[in-house]
Length: 322
Image 1 (cartoon, rainbow, N blue to C red):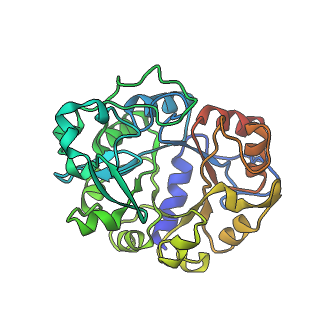
Image 2: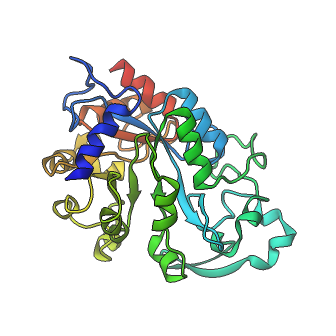
């Protein structure tokens, strides 16, 4: 498909992605034979408050191949970089008396939650908020200093720095249900963008729609949650190639037991899909590994085509060492 050719071109454009003989780390090759890309998950979010221009800029300085903005929408239809529609965990909204009456209950992933919601705020109001570190145990030294960026600001940073862009549409069906369509403003912001791009989502329908609207490579995310599969958000791998170019599985799906690889990467590669697992964290090593360096090396050895990392510098160092 056309997008596959575009994906191959973007792979060649990505920083550090042109392999020479013996450059591919690990035991299994990536789909292209090039080294795996490092995707700065929410920016260098292990060190600075996530989804801020400062966190993205730090990731660029560290050498990440892609920066990842998760996207939600404001009441006036602007895409902003937040992982969640609710704002209490990653901003100072709870300390803003002027917004006390915005707190309300609504459904979140099948459970009621009382919070402040991005779709209840205009962009101008969002811009008065400041970002906070949502992860316990990470530095809060930079809390309440950085603003919440728009997608356009992140696109401008990608253009200026030449780094790849990897946006995720969060809860697109919810936004559609309340009259906010993410597709048009997403594509408008990235029109003519000449840096490597992937667009990702857990919801298959928006990817199917985008497949008819753009040549940017598309990635179907997988949580491993049976309820998501039952809802049709995460279809079987053999269906994904009809509308997407890659898959982003939870890293836990790549192991059948601690240290024992599953066949996920091989199956996805057999369908011509790149594999970008999430999320590797220096301060939360998983799947039986004691050191994040060992976890990363084992993922690279499986032939993954990239990794999402909260600490992109570590992922880059392990890639280089291998």
